[in-house]
Length: 152
Image 1 (cartoon, one colour):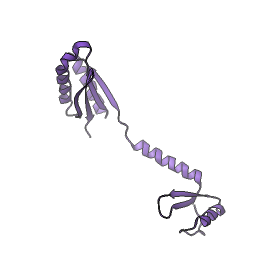
Image 2 (tube, rainbow, N blue to C red):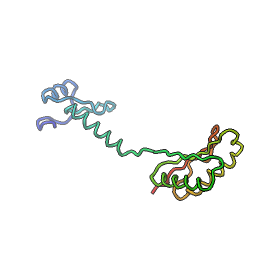
Image 3 (cartoon, rainbow, N blue to C red):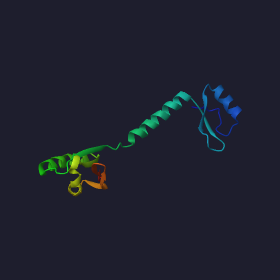
Image 4 (spheres, rainbow, N blue to C red):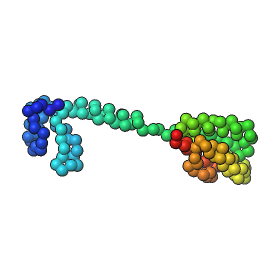
């Protein structure tokens, strides 16, 4: 970028600006917190483009956490439980977190022990695919459990 006739080194602000102007490039501050501040002579638009490209690449590498939910009633029968358990297995295999909850309607709150037993049974059945991140907790009319997939 910088021509062969330019020495790399420490310059005063005026000299650096004059040098950048003579090369028809921009003086860009790379590290303002350093002592003395680090600057480069380069094309500013190209610098911004490269910076955005790096940020986009870093963002693409980060994994997004997906949360899937499964809803049960306090007196869910065996067939419905097995059906929903298969869906839970599929979600955990895909790498999504699973939030299973029992929703208590009206007076069914008296069956909160049944709801807790149901959620613990689900956690035990899914033990080889995921680990319990949060034990069953009653929040208002909902009792929920959080299961995250095991690492491969």
